[in-house]
Length: 264
Image 1 (cartoon, rainbow, N blue to C red):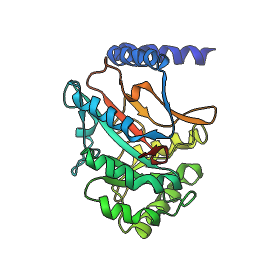
Image 2: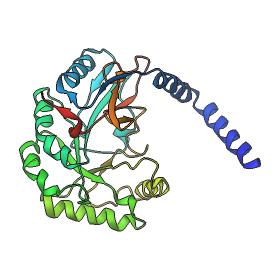
Image 3: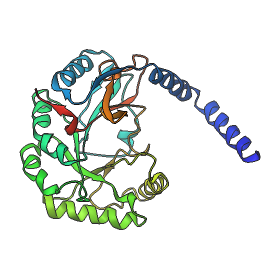
């Protein structure tokens, strides 16, 4: 009982220290409760095209390059103005993602979108070598990095380094960025431990200079994704076309998985 009271007191103190942030989070929580299902997968590219068009026409939104050539912590934590900064990330989770990756990147290139593309090298779902031709084709148009699942193992530091070595061996270069593969609530404590390891070792991760896991370098206040799940079916909410209009000076992530998209 005492522990619970202490936690409540700490939460109230944090809210008093940054009331604007907590008011924003409160509005986001209410907004997400009112979202409606827009489409079930597979999704058509015209849905993504409509989303990009609406974002570009908005006076409150910038669609940004996923990762600038020069990365520093100071210019990633803060947004630059009152506009919302939108970033697109592509996680290549499964073999079907590998199969659909090139058409999706062709589509995004035609709309001048620079996304981050993250490849698994745990070899659990596909051989990362299958991505090599796509990477060579688009290497100057997208940021290609590691999509790590290392925290599924207790010795996550060893497996993280192993995945980096496999990346180099299979794809011919070391990534300068990584994202984290999700397992829902599974391994959640080890995932948090891995985040803490990363937080404590910024600047000492070899080739890695950027990652967007947790709230360390680029915190996202709102995430739009194509992988919501109900009764075994993936779907997107209507926020895919209509992001919250009350957000200001916010980082927004649009998370895509190629396996859910078709160009038909």
